[in-house]
Length: 500
Image (cartoon, rainbow, N blue to C red; front, side, top):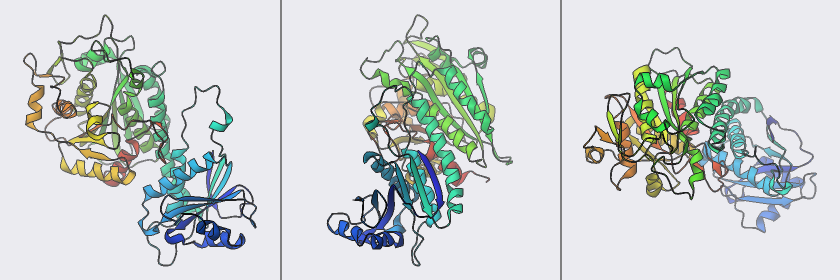
């Protein structure tokens, strides 16, 4: 689909799209269309339940007096209450509608702000509308060799028109770079495990060098010298060797310590010797979702030239059962020197993160750390697929993350940490064990990670197991890999850490 933001001109074919505010109020663009069609829009609204409430869509086919295939009325509700994310959802919902009805060409008419209108101006509205449509346009179809035409997207061109497009294009420029980061994450998460393994994942990340990101990877020998026994223990059962991916974006001359984002990158998780049931195991191709988010975030930040210094670390392994796989009961020594009794080899993500978290602190001394991981099924039992779990040792960081999540509708729910939960992972044979009992599984996993955070370092852990993959479409998130976390963390950086 070709998406553009252009100066208003007459569209002599295809669909015309215009907003309608609450109580069927027709702004100027819609009123002009209604006049040219001899009141067809007003009659259509009167004959329907369409009220102009946010998200409603009404279609008027081949209206008399207009050369267009259809006029699509999109309910905007109260313009003063429209958030950026609402406009994005409207853009995504419109794209879905146009594809469902088989339209190939569409023009969106963005109204100028009224004299008493509050909220986003036309430039911001146009940019966010376009951004939502772009996010909704994503498809992962590279392995489909045959697909009925009726199932393919029909829309070939979408033009967003307004009187003064220059400012809208500037706004959209940065948003497009964030969308490209989201798409990279969705691609990585969607790829099968016979394509994405630790080394091929690193190869994909190296493409960010074209944007100015420094990328390197530590192999098994380097990690062994550093004492990363926890990560290497998970990797030892696979013919695909583990990697520690390190990405650096220097966008600021600030002397402040960098931000750090750390991702769990298990490119396939069989559970190891503690093997998972066969049913649903195919979903474990996206157990590298946290690492996918970190790569997408680094792309978004570098793409829009974020004025911040950021480190991205991904612990990359494949968890396989074999004659060399680690066993339940093994004791490994982490880079921190702490020892871990491995009671369940399917609780492997925390082992990978333990060494990745310690490495980033030892090497870069970051001012704060956010890690992301599809860490526990227990978080899905707690929060379903609507929120990611947030665990943190710092109230300010938690509040900032929660606000960023609300702003982009990638929502977080803070979960508790305490000494009482921490005791559940004490071990008789080592400093700790990698699982607790059957209760509070997400919390004990977070308590485990906290043992690898140095005192005084603000840290947050996002358990994204329930939000990394979706089995249903949403306005800006087609079913499949969601890219959850890229927009959230980009918003966090933009609001609080750029050029400070």
